[in-house]
Structures are given as C-alpha cells and as structure tokens.
Image (tube, rainbow, N blue to C red; front, side):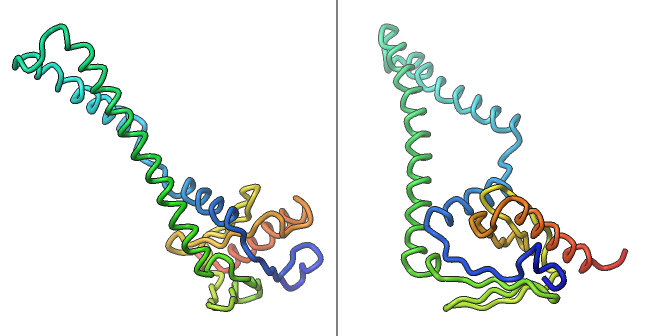
Length: 189
C-alpha cells in the first residue's frame, strides 16, 4: 500500500494447499455459523430423547413386547438413536471433504493467485479469474492466527495464509494498513 511498503506489502502471490483451503473453510464457517442457541439445541435433543424413549413404552403398553424385554429394547432404541446421529455427522464431514477435494482437483484450489492491494481496493488475479473489490466493499479484517481474513460483502472472504508474512509484526502491520484503508473508504456519517 502506497506509503507503507516497508511495513505492509502491497502484493502477495499464493498457491493454497488443500489443507489450507480446508482450514480456511472451517475457520470462516465457525465465524459465520453460530448455530442454534444452546437452550434451543438442548431442548431439541431432550425432546428427541423423550420421543425415542416413548417408542419402547408404547410397544410395552400395546403388548408388542413383554416386560422382561423392555429394558433391552429401550437400550437398543437409545443406542440406535446415538449411532444414527454419529453416522449422520460422519457422513456430512466425509461429504464436505470430498467436495472440497473435488474442487481442488479441478484446479480452482490449486490455482496460483496474486492479490494486489492499492489505493482503490483489492485486485485478485489468477489463471481462471480476475476480480476487483473496492475498499468500500471490504467489511473488515481479522488476524486469525493461521490466516489473515479479509471480510467482503455477502460473507465472501480473502484468506491470506500466515506463512506469507515474515513474522507476527509484519502481519500486524498489514492488518493495521488494511484496517486504515477500510475506515477511510467508509462514507461519512
């Protein structure tokens, strides 16, 4: 960025590894998706556990199972419920990773990108794309340790791996310089 080139670089060239893309995706997902409120989550879980428990009680009341079989049937129902939840969670994780690998193999992830930070905004150039984001489209910047995350409109992100910076001081200088550009681009209130 003009005037601060000793402290904050104005150009980065990066080729993301598959692991970096996965880590950036998880990081931004955690920042954006706060999930349901804890009280709602536990209320739903308690309701589901009650519903699962009612099935063996109903079977006992209807005479489908005898009283001697009630406890094993109840335990089996709860174990099946827990196993189903764990299986669903595992399938969702594996599917997400599979999709991420497919995108990476198609070249989008392994493309070398050049980010240029100038007076007008951020320019992104690669073999398959080119984009320009003006500073007023940039919502914020955050040093997340493993990445410097630049938040754009509509929850889009630019994630610069920490390995691009010489040290934490260089990273902090870059974050401060970008934050100053973001503030300068905001309309006067």
